[in-house]
Image (cartoon, rainbow, N blue to C red; front, side):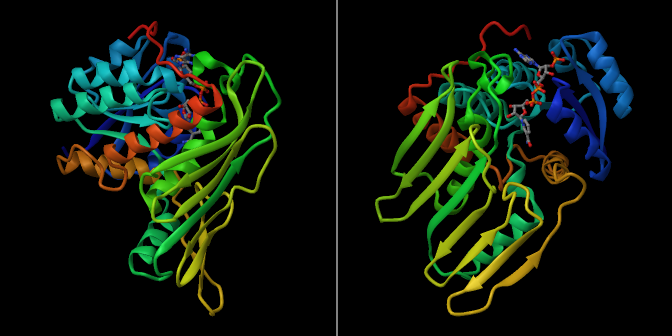
Length: 331
Ligand SMILES: NC(=O)c1ccc[n+]([C@@H]2O[C@H](COP(=O)([O-])OP(=O)(O)OC[C@H]3O[C@@H](n4cnc5c(N)ncnc54)[C@H](OP(=O)(O)O)[C@@H]3O)[C@@H](O)[C@H]2O)c1
């Protein structure tokens, strides 16, 4: 596969930001778009130069000119589209949170594995050059053994029941939208926790407004995490090891630098800016995986996605938030 043809599904806010980064991706082009509305699809196609325009998700799934779908619908609307795409043999990059439920994630993952079709969660943080450098440093033992991860990601979002972030039918709440970043980050450096504790509050629509999480590990390691729609926070992260600390300055989910402070030493700022808006790196990963015939990313493997989904849903359930996949979505 010399050039990978991308199709975008659900031309909303994030699809536009990601499409703008396509110019930084070698061997790839934005070939098509699908919307539930012909008008929205046509407007997006014109803006980003796509020539395959579909007024149904089924249309792009069955389009033989498209190699991979970027699914950018709200969380409960990922599952049905991803499953249908995989069944049709189409590779998928699925926005975070991967699905609304653990069962939904498991089903998509099982389908991808049994069909031998590429699937990846669009956790763009893991592909940021600064985070890649951070992983290398930790792997090389620059801060010794990692014992603790701290991270916060919060915004002040005025309550609006119609907004996706507060609408249960669209998987609203802080956890699946912002919590996924802090949880995935903690999992990346500590693995899946042995227990999850959470404190939080709910919005009038019943979705989680704020959540403070403690991920606990039987050997005493821990992650302390915050996600909230109620008040803004810097959005920083810190990895604490036995021989030093690495700070990830705001916003840690797409940083341009990290700060390494070895135990007893001076802080060293390491600059590693992203290409374009920062989405290019996940697009490059998928494009390269497909060109190499791989069915999973080693950086964002499906097992990690499933483990993160378990932590997120466990925390939601503890707060009294019960997510569901959208079974009425027409695909
Ligand atoms: N990586 C990031 O930085 C980032 C940032 C923001 C959001 N996201 C993720 O991207 C996904 C979409 O977020 P967004 O902010 O782009 O949402 P959005 O602006 O509301 O767009 C979502 C699109 O999905 C389609 N859709 C399908 N079923 C829908 C339904 N039942 N209700 C509403 N829309 C539906 C709509 O397109 P049509 O009707 O035209 O088909 C809509 O334009 C979420 O999973 C979110 O977590 C990621």
